[in-house]
Length: 597
Image (cartoon, rainbow, N blue to C red; front, top):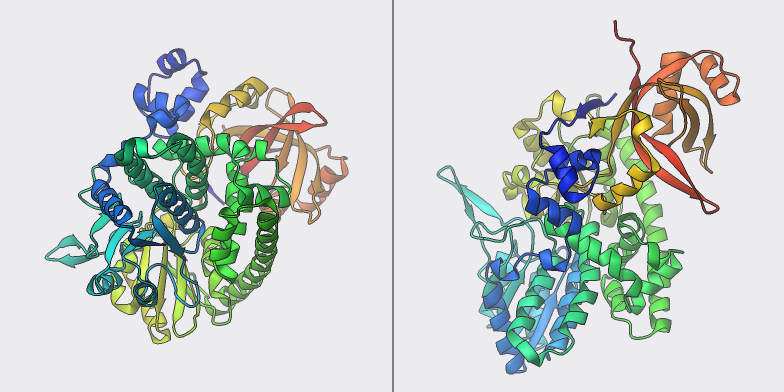
């Protein structure tokens, strides 16, 4: 059973309501998202491109632009080296198109997940030298590639690193000392000396910021730069969602602008992907980015070569784009099948290997495909609410991915075990790594021995914005919540709580019987329609345990005479059916109702 935590943050909600023309309820919701002060509230509600932060505050960005400008003037060969996920592909695409627009002699290489592994490696560096490359420019990687950057320098190449991941460090005399690669310029907001006001941007946004500076230095030599940057913001916003960056500060602006502009985006590849997935480009949301478009772009990097996704975005005709998009959609279907098999294997492993759950889950799925390790780790993390690492067999070495919970800094904790890894990188909530099979048990032991999480940290928490009677959840209020969008990480949809909700009747729906629809009454006898899309097995068990299976049978038969009450966490929504709008209560969680004395 979840623990409910109701926000109790203070502010002058009436003043905020009056100043910004919103309800007191919406004012409270904004404060709950830690948006404080008139300037921040105005940015949150009205933020557009003019609110984006000054790119010149990123470390080394001006130096990086000057290096690239010099290379362009000398017609030197520039190679962009990205990564195989959505952020890596889109940041590579942004840099490639921007450098081409600036007149650069540029090409792109993306690492192969299985043959190369994550980011810059020795082979990519040596291949660049063999191809006569003068300048290597990384994106969405490079900050943890000190040895590879050193190799490139020894081969007389210039290296510009653009990244957003945590900077590796070593502990010495009780202090953490950064280990920066020996690159000619290092643009990364996670550097300690960074003055950029918002650190949680993705690799594609760093690439976008770089082009802003590059174009600014080129002045009138760049024609149509504003229109170009407006198109690239679509891809920066897509990467922000798919890399699960917090939708706060300027990230919300990038995503808002992306969603606003995607319907007019002339990119053949993106429009083909939208069309083949049966989506409407005029009604794309963060959900479509994160769960439909993003997985298709990711699938090629998981099961084939990420270069196919880059080719899709760079397609010059509708026919070429359609052919590539069909391939990506097909690969995503294969990825889903592999994921389902991997999740089943992981569940069997957990059932047989663990009599008592460890604080940090580390499992070795020898025969699972390494490309879905991160997805499986995410599923385990969600199910058990514990940090989870899934390790699989690679070509010559084992490879793993980890996903974390809020109270566990995965990058920091795994950094303490860096001696066990041949390659390692990540951030607080996720990590990727390679290691020898003999070190897996040692890693499991050390992570758990060092773990300081308590039982309270493993308890699932439902964060409630406020207790609000259902009668206040009007259609007008739900429509006003549009100012809070886009919803996602760190900017979730509003969730409210209501006590003593009476269940009247219900039915289980869906092809897989995976959702329920109910008629309910509030404590004053008003009727509402409620739906539940969550864990139906858990919901059914809750109902049977609290009211008995016979009573619940009557609930679904429509013959219930008894009065049964529950407390609900809910999100009000508007359901549109045949052009008619109806208020709908979407249950997020539930607890037993206990009568107060």
